Length: 537
Image 1 (spheres, one colour):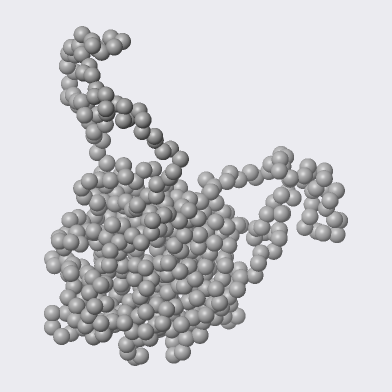
Image 2 (cartoon, one colour):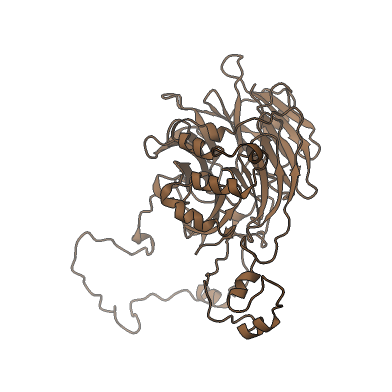
């Protein structure tokens, strides 16, 4: 699809609802890849559902965790995905195969994780009641980032646009800017209200283009800053925000905020209801309010990287918001006229002549120049929307789409392997797993039922000093429509004792999956439990 043809030449924000994506189980968090072609959705039964956003169909389902998935992040090239669940586990996944590369076990729940924008070997993790942790995936090492006040460990953190700096914010309104490689303090400032009082930092989000970032604070104001000004002010600076965005009428607290793909708009989801507020960043005026179903609570919001499309999650369903496409047929031809009623057509005298006698002769120079010009049909120009400002070429190794292969239950013959007779002759009698016939193909394929053993997943325990081990993730304690999820996500009755220290036991997984998925989707969930990874067409 040609992105240049989708340019709206006007407003670049969505106006109305454009359908929903039903993941069968309850959706909790979502994130687009860098190009907006794939949407990863984390569910409360531990699965990650990857949607092909162009076809609006499920491309892959990964049975990732036992507990609900609370945070997701794509790598820069789209081949890897990191996920965090409410049982303090962080996992790295290969998107193509659906295999888990490695796991990390933290002492407290994970509030947010983020891949380094340029270095696929680094992941920023924000545990509860702990300083942010910078993970290095290749050697499984970690670095605890310095904080302003050791007694205040309610810290949020985020990479800047290119990953050169890490911005952290605590509950006292103090923002620290750290060098990613050395963890040295580069700049700092404090977010204050109208008086000298401070306010807690809830989240920090950066725009994909430009140097702007926003800070969502507990005083219900979204402040937009310029990153270059922050670095110029240095330590203990006093930068002024470019914009202050808030709902003056209802004093709405904000659950989730993010920039548009071009960085010109900001969307904020209300923490009270399913409502999305969209502001224009340069002016600071409210341009649109999108209302979802009344009575629902918003869980997550994500803006498409290159198009005016927003995905929001409430009541376990992903809602899509887009522009209203108005058909304008007169745009295809300058002399096209739209008629309200039939009119009598007068035929020109030369309309059906072989040669138009009334046509004016074109200039010879222009025609000759057009004939002599060579048209290049081999080279491929990079799409500007897919390239950063410091890049000239696209990443041709990037994973934009997932291949979907049709599944055959019982093939009559195997065109790519030996015939069934040969397979039966080669099978050794003592090997109980090998047998002849079409079923042999199933045995050779890696699956949870049998076949070749999968590689052992490396699990690293991250030790953090002074972090309480009995914290409960906020996702499990949300008021309102999430009460049912809180009960379902908790440990089933009768699973005390040995089960308490072994969250990966299959029995707990089976009971939890049956408790989390509603009655209409139970049969579907049971079918998915047979395979860890399954692509759907």
